[in-house]
Amino acid sequence: MAISLEALPVELVADILSELDIASLITVSYLSRGLRLVASEPSLNPWRRPILRNLLNTDGDYEPALKHLSVRQTVPRQNWLEILTLGKAEYLLFDMTLPNLKEAEWEECFRRRFLPGWTKWKKESTWKAAFLKILHRVWHRSHSSCTADEAWTHYIVLNRNGSANLLEASSRSYNPMTVFHEIKLQNNLAHLMTHARLVVEFKDVRIIALGVLSKPRSSFSVNHNARLFLHPPGITRGEDEEAPVHSETASEGSVDSSHSVVEPSVPVGNKVLQNPNEIYRVLTHPLPSKSHARYPFYTPGGEDKRWLGSEELEEGGRQWVGPMLVTAQLIGPQTKEPVGDGLPLQDLDLLVGAGRNQYASLSWVDLAVIAPWLEVTQKITGIGLGH
Image 1 (cartoon, rainbow, N blue to C red):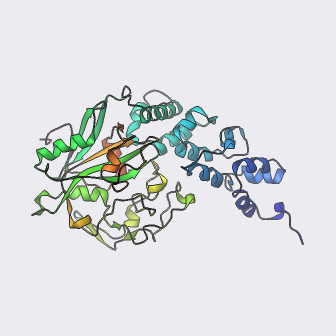
Image 2 (spheres, helix red, strand yellow):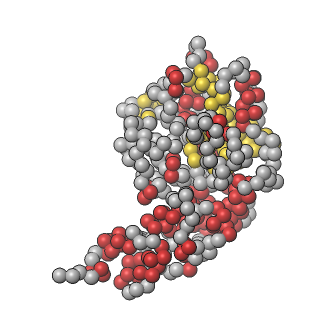
Image 3 (cartoon, rainbow, N blue to C red):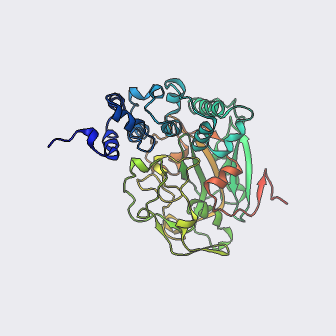
């Protein structure tokens, strides 16, 4: 006995429709009243899966049907939050027909895509204007050496005594390796190699930490906040490093405990975390890229390289000593291209090469969102000890 498609439960119909490409789904959604109702129902939303397949495909172009999807009344408006959050900047700015969203929805898109400190650029404008202005600024700076929009770049230095400094340098000449070399000279660490770690990556920017690894003779020079910044207390990498990240969870922020090992009890200062799963929440504002979808938990796939050692020690049994510099690097079309024979996504590969010379400002509020577990004893704006 043959069963028609519309005789099936609507949940199953929506699941079947979600396997189509966008162009086919547009056609199917107009074939009958029943299919139109299923396609336009926000709770079923068969559009989300084909849209995510496009947005998370970094190797190819988007489907042509995505360009003018905003004119289709059968597409639930909630899909635009993910399109505007995960879409390529140049595609959103120059190719796509943008939807007519509410002010609250534009604000949500802004907070999911950009660092929270960038809200200072909104000023008196609407959230839509602020979103498009910052998106164009990010695209422009990632494709050129122009620094007219941001003459000074702010970065943060985590000191070994628990304090932190918010410093600035001229954007035209800012080079974190040069700046950190001066910091090493001031702390008698110039003879040691600089190591860089990718902390977390977002759509338009990635957070990079520069520090020094060594085997200190005493604990006096060890920077405990540097290690806590890279390794949230109670979370370890786990065993299955090469397990794939499912495309459906890349923007949902779900956590699979099988990918991150959680220690039963971890002392932090004078407190003890009994269950870090109850303390930490997957970051959603801003939304990390697919490679760091479960941040601050470990994200399998090979690009989350915060854990390169075991327990209290980094690779080779070393520890982070002296200050650590934290900066925000803009992501351009050449930023992720491998350079030389070095290890990918760490050390010189993060800092040297084409597409790696443009940086954005980092603020205290950005640090608080990226590492809320970090206990900074004193926040100092500018140079000095804060006395």
